[in-house]
Length: 141
Image 1 (tube, rainbow, N blue to C red):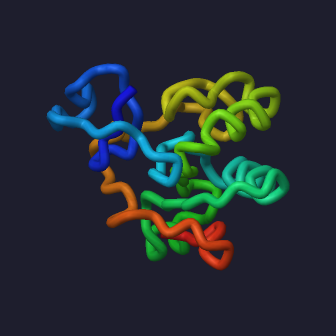
Image 2: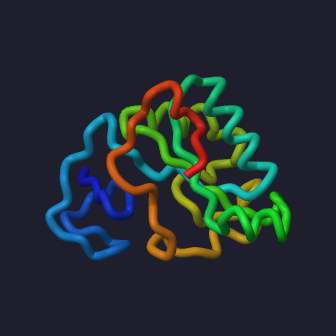
Image 3: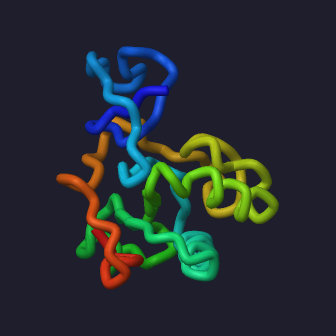
């Protein structure tokens, strides 16, 4: 399994199928990996579940603050990232809640009714190495 720092995803291939980056690294337990995308209310539900199971996470809104204020919270799409070492735990804990919509952004699960309208490469993931300190839990990026 290989880790793409640009897409923050793990892949079986040596070349990232999303961005084409070569020479991917082996994932470390602390590497932030993409978990899923959820809209509005369902993002809040997902955030609460991550807090309950005690997993640090990054939450990245894709519209930005100004657009979210103008259009409303329910229109914002949030991407969630968790440490690679906790990804399986998160998927297991949330599997029943989102009906298997944890394998990526695409899907028809709750909170993602239209699927992720954005390809994984259209929005920049959080910059730099993630610092999973307890005070950073749930930080909006």
